[in-house]
Each structure stands twice: as C-alpha cells, then as structure tokens.
Amino acid sequence: MNKGRLEAFSDGVLAVIITIMVLELKSPSQPTLAALRPLLPVFLAYLLSFMYIGIYWNNHHHLLHATQQVNGATLWANLHLLFWLSLVPFTTAWMDENHFESWPVVVYGAVLLFAAIAYFILARTLIKLHGRDSSLARSIGRDRKGKISIWIYAVAILLAFVRPWIAGAGYVVVAIMWLIPDPRIERGARAEVKS
Image (cartoon, rainbow, N blue to C red; front, top):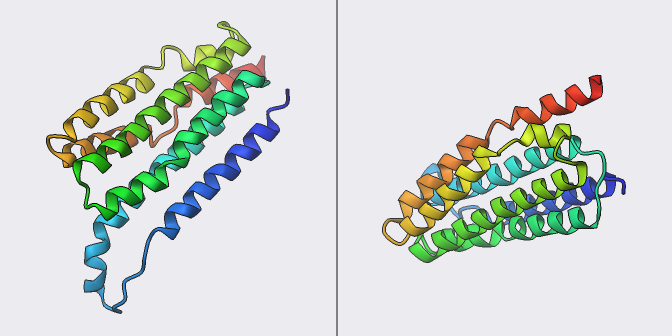
C-alpha cells in the first residue's frame, strides 16, 4: 500500500487540530498591554500544545519518510494516534478555563500519555511490517526516549493531584526532550538510500 494518502491525511488532521487550538484564543476587549496579562497562562498552554502537535507532526514525518509501505494495521495505528492528538485542543481549553486545576491537568496529561503510547504502537507496527533488520528498526532501536517520556507522563499525572504546576513542568520537560527530532531515523533513511 502506498504511504502517500496516509501522510496527506495525517497532515490535514494535524493542520485542523492547530487551527482549532488557535480559535480558542480570545482577544481581550481592552486595547492595552495590561489586558493581555490575564491571557498569559492561556497563551503558554496554547504554546505548549502547539509545540506538542508540531513535535508529533515532525516525528511522524520522519517516521513515514523511513518507511517503504503501509498496511491496514498501520492505518489503524495511525488513526489511533490522530484520535488522541485530536483531543489536545479540548483538554488545552479545559485547563485554561479552569485555571489549571488538578483534574484538567490530569486529563491533559492522560491525552499526552495515550498519544505517546499510540506513537509507540505506530512505530512498532511499522517495524513489524518492515522487519526487525530494516533500517527503520535499526533507527528506532530500543526507543529509550519514547519509554522515558511515557514514564514522565505517568508520574506527572499522579503529581497533578498534589501540585498541578509540577505536572505541567513534567509535560514541558518531555516537550523539550522531543523538540529536536530523533536524528536516528533520518540517518537510517539516508543509509538505506545509499545502499
């Protein structure tokens, strides 16, 4: 199966997710800089969520670039990932509207956790399709960063019941870990092209 439709569909869904998030930002009614101050936490939550969608888009692109083909299992694994990412605008808005109370921060973290698990499943599905000796499998390796991210999310979710800002700091740490795309996949794809 050609991967082009999967890439195009995923790009479209991620673009819609970003558009929905920006529509949640409401402009202040006053024409002063002071009127922006109460919106700072809302903007920071939007920025974090935008970064997450961008990180997934970037890594998804690299992952699919390293693949040769997709199958039905890949399509479902990809839809699973897009489902969790499509909930990011809702959970971001809920956190904003409730001033980062525990439950909205927990649910936001749960969506990030399930998106990370879905990405892990997508990568494993592609490795199974391409084989354990493929450049994709070698590039991803043990996926230490992905597993560490899942653990940070799980701990942060629990800490949100104690102090929501600690959970938020955990979510920021994971985003920072992933800001630079994993270069192993790019190197693996280049090596396969040279072969």
